[in-house]
Amino acid sequence: MRILVTGGAGFIGANFVQHVLATHAEDEVVTFDLLTYAGNLANLEPVMRNPRHRFVRADVADPTAVTAALVGVDAIVHMAAESHVDRSIADASDFLRTNVVGTQVVLDAARAAKVRRFLQVSTDEVYGSLGPTGAFTEESALRPSSPYAASKAAADLLVHAAHHTHGIDALISRCSNNYGPYQFPEKLIPLFVTNALADEPLPLYGDGCQVRDWIHVVDHCRALDVIVRRGRAGETYNVGGGNERRNVDVATLILETLGKPQTLLRHIEDRPGHDRRYAIDASKTARELGWAPQEPFAAGIAATIDWYRKNRAWWEAVKSGAYRDYYERMYGARLRAAGGEGRS
Ligand code: NAD
Ligand code: TYD
Image (cartoon, rainbow, N blue to C red):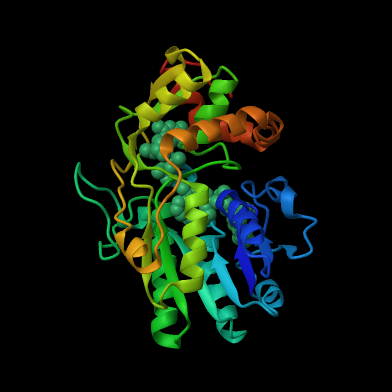
């Protein structure tokens, strides 16, 4: 089978491309990625010379480029997106273009090219925020809070409409917060690990008691692999780690693991509209597809911290240039107000 992975040079994409090539000796992968600030060919270094892998640099919102890349493709795993909530709060325009328009462009091109299957890689954030109990099921209402989550929910609805109206063989996965190697250090875990390694403050939003359900990226990749091969068309599949943690506890664990002082923790002004809690009920995916997460959080986070410790050149390169301006814009004033340094 030949799979086209949009956004394959990003965090989950690069892990997924490597996973498919390593576990399916007969498969070919086309990585289709614009290489925005979040895309990085260094993430694909282990497969760039693999004859079963091809890289195309192009935009999912460009119909000509998408159509050209689809020749001979059996399945699309669509994960190209603007993916960071804080950036969507600052400016939502790229989120609408890539996540919403881009998804419709890929759907239309897939239909014209008669691609056999389309998997939309979505997020639990489309369901909004939970109270202290309960978990999202595939039947939960869509109540996105951030512009990012709203753009993903819009894309999911376009996928549903393409299946319903045009009969496209499409399905949707919705996963909780991922962690692991190659994650851009704007997200909580790589930001905090790399800041701690550099003896910089860890900017914790609000009281730090928000809860996320963490899953190792390889467990997510295993889920995507079975969903794209064996999931039922028109269906949605939740994916989660069954592993809820408060942000403050994740931060404390990172500092402890690295032998850094807890005084690096800074409570800064909260993110506007901050979702309090996410939790996923992934029992449908387990029941229908026999999938379950395999990586315990304690082992997964230790290995991940170790990866960032050993791959300093990777994140130091990523954290230079435009990242410095981003960091100052996002954190400078809030960290200074909290009595910390704005540098990273
Ligand atoms: P990421 O930001 O690390 O990577 C996104 C990739 O998409 C980058 O390589 C970027 O260059 C590429 N891209 C962006 N705009 C593009 C465009 N217009 N055309 C082509 N490529 C473009 O994101 P990620 O964390 O790897 O997330 C991947 C997908 O998984 C996203 O769709 C996201 O919504 C979803 N998801 C992420 C998580 C998570 O915890 N990170 C959880 C659930 C779902
Ligand atoms: P993030 O990694 O941005 O993922 P999401 O918002 O999509 O869940 O954030 C995870 C949690 O960590 C979320 O509750 C916000 C919080 N957070 C901080 O406290 N400080 C930070 O600097 C960042 C980036 C996130």
